[in-house]
Image 1 (tube, rainbow over the protein chains, first blue to last red):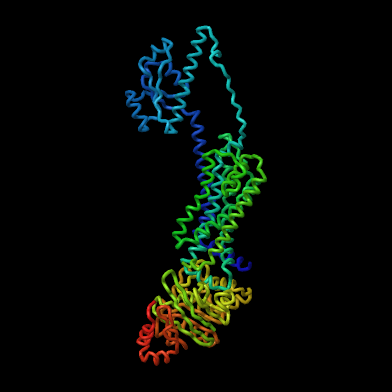
Image 2: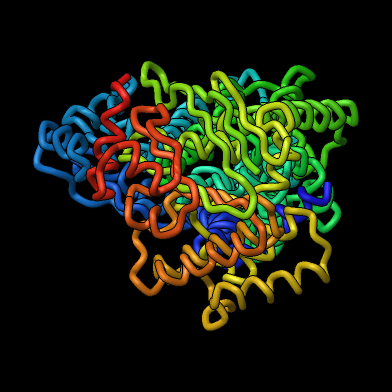
Length: 392
Length: 242
């Protein structure tokens, strides 16, 4: 036990003096998340606001066939401009992205309208282009509104109430809370915590295994009168210390960053007060042992510092995988997921941020299973350290 | 006192050591001499217990390196070939770390570190981080680190390789001092002159086997060569390749 503490103390001191370890643990991990997050949130706020207010330019071909429609579109904050020469040019223009959307009014529009036949209007757009789709939606909804207005006037002229054609009155009641809505966006937050945590211990895990071997300091260390298990556990403990530090910093930086983000404008109120921050730490803490042992294990197999770096970058990404799969399939949290590390932490964290009651059984399973897997991997690391192939 | 008993060690199909036996006694310097790839390092690695032999074993003051390796290690100070230091720790911290791992208490550590720093004449750079150290400085610190727990048996794997004249001289002085204090010193080299200048006993190994185990004069007599280099070449021809 004393040996373990000596190794721990030495590794922590040693790595605190290493600028690279320090930057990745205390700066990169904890700041990367909030900065990326602030960027994404601001972008989405900008786009949401832009939707309603801004005047949008709408190229129209054949506007002279429908002067009333053009006036109507202009009243809907659409700035109608003369479009390309003909339909073919419009199609080509949308394809290449010169135009987001072009409205084509055919020559016979006026006659069709007079005859009471549904008058044909074309909206040319590229549905694969999300930016264009937003503009197309505005154009479509303006045209639909004009059509309804005109239809209603026709019914009234024939002595029929326009409500006759509206058989249903659909009223949607949205029960999502501002905290709940923020869950969608803040879902990616949990990965940033796990990323910061792993980042914090990455260089330590390399330094204490592949680095130590490359430097030639492993062999004299192993010839000392101490058991290899103790050396290994001390090194994993030191990696855990750095990971914990990185996690705490990351939680704090998010706590501060969220205060400066205009969530109200998106109709969100993330539940991320001091109490949630502390609870989040304890939910994520079991992942520290797992992360430290996985990274040490992977780094032990590599021949050099560089090789270890390559493999550990893969380990950095691995925890996203279960989160990604569940997000894409839109699966609801269930008991079975709680056995999967990273996924269970992610789901529990989302529940907390959404201000929903957290299932204590789920928490227990998540903590226990993550700890058990971490302990198992630590044991494997210790076994591996007994092999002489370790010397390379 | 180190007793090596019929050590065998293979790596895959390569037989690195094929039955090496010899003894290194207290108060004497024993040199392990041999060409590159003769099995010197592998033999020494078995002695400081980072490798397990396929067959045979060795006793360090009666402690078996295979079955009682922790007790054996307690009595060894080892300098592996190309031993590295921790670059972010000072020389003194590097030495103190090993002292702590060897189980010395705090007051003893301070005394020992101060003593060993003086003995190896590393005062000038003892408090600097070892990052920019020269090869000679690094070797000195690595030896100091290996000696800090005052082991009875000292194993040095090619300690003089890459050292300049001054550093080699001070290393020689140190090895003689250790001998005079009754320690058992075992070191490897591929330089005949160096071994002859220092050693009481010489073990020449080639192709993983002991060719001759004798004093310098004994080797001259047995090979019938007055010139040491000739004697060395003749001795290693005695062992057929694996």
